[in-house]
Length: 199
Image: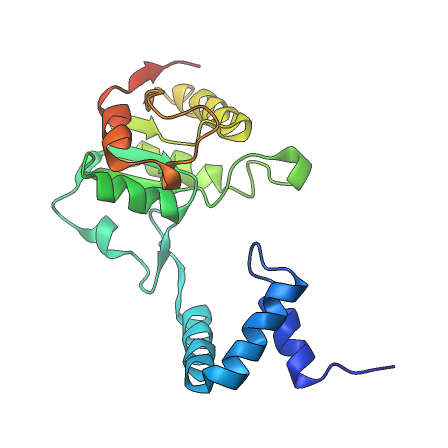
């Protein structure tokens, strides 16, 4: 039985990145070893530190080094509004658009039964508890994909059953588009033109 060499292990580890196949991983490994050993060591240290110190915020579920992230602790945010996004990149896009000053809940995915992602994997029970705190409106900012629409529909049913007002960002965004790839003006307009949805 052959054991992997250090180089083989490095190449195999790099393949865990999205879009990185065997050839790309091999090129990256060779580059780091041949041309940028300090960069490789810095990358290894940064990855190790991040994996050890970053977890999910107890309120919004976004990545954070503290139990409650700075955004959730900010007194400048409107606690009566709760925006639900699929991924941290979507939250960053919302913040860059500067069109929203409320709180967030990051699902860390979307409903996708074929991929084994159901309501439990998205921690929807935590979302319902968070929405019940002092929220007047939940804004669904999931992507306009089949899975994003299904996720928004499921959440709408859950929250409307609790008597919580739910709205969905307007479809100024392209159908099939994802928030992280949309310009901030389009996203800002979609948030401003959101409409209430019912279960």
